[in-house]
Length: 245
Length: 288
Image (cartoon, rainbow over all chains, first blue to last red; front, side, top):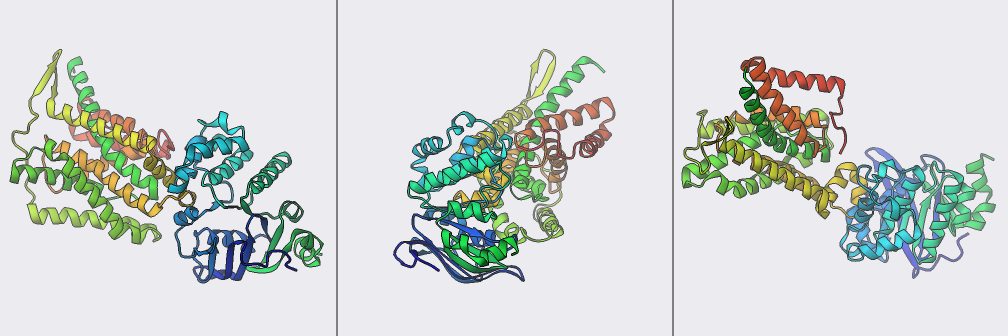
């Protein structure tokens, strides 16, 4: 059902035939995705399907047992995570994972730790404060004292401080109030309009596919379905997996 | 018991407290980074003291002059310990981690006994000696020097951890290693650096203690025990809090000796330790 992403030329992030295991316990089997430059792509699937494992493999936190990952035409599997972020692929972990005992400002500054981003640090600070105006008045507050929604926004802002070409966000809406979910959805669309490719994980199919251009569906460690959001929303397979129908 | 003796004790307790704090800060920094207790921390201190002693004995270099060298040597020793031993046991069982550094401690102590013998050695005629009198109270100049230099080193460490890019990266690594690596921080290097800096702390402290303290292979044991108490008081991983905790330990030690019985001074310190771990296991000041 793939339509517009077929061309190699505008693929920014590509994973092929990934096998990933924790010790003897294999979590991903022959998993592959292709993220078109400039799109919003969501990874869908029930709990334990391997979505986070896939994202962690893309950002280098996990080493695949087999397969390859390419970003911007360059092979990145095997690189340590601190090198991959320097290539322009940033990753916001599940449950925000801010540095709890550092201030909001210190968290943001660390987002731009790698050399390329550090040169643009001041400019980047003004940029993310434009996207999240509340950041300006919270600079000196310790990260763990923020509300969940604010923490998520700081986490996304911290990811943006790396000046990524592609931002991956693991469950950006987890545990947030409907109003905050809307705000963060709007932010994802805004940064995408600024040219940043976004990959995110979400359990709620409706929510995810309304936001994303295309989706990948994982089940039991395999990518079983992919396609444009509109097509996936109509898919009976998606209904089977998520609605048990 | 006169007021003079009490005041005298308070002053010397505070002075030693700053040195304890510096030793404990190194231990706390390493623990905060990777939740490993360096049981060879006291032996590192012993090596630093011997380093200061031998540069004086062989080349007549005063410990204060050789201090940068001692500090650099201990930094290197810390990095090598991480690269050579710790890195390989990071994901190992807790017992492996304990016995790796404990074994290193035994090895270093026995090595020192073998090479240098068990004699107590003292540096004669250091630059700083004698004492000053302040309204009837006497303060040993070596102790005063060591104390203020330790305080300065502690201040430098604090500045480094909170005000520099690398210091923030160290803190970030301590608070969330995975998230730190996703910021572009080379966490492997941060671990090695943490061991280097943590060991350099006892490099400074050892050089300073060598001015007025006996140097012998077992000298690290007492200081290390006091450092564990200090770290537990301050909260494991909370580097700034070790300053106050060090002063508390110094005061309790001296006052316990004066008010109760000199033979019981460490017993009082460890009683305090027991009270704290039972009543506030996270330390008096909690997380940094």
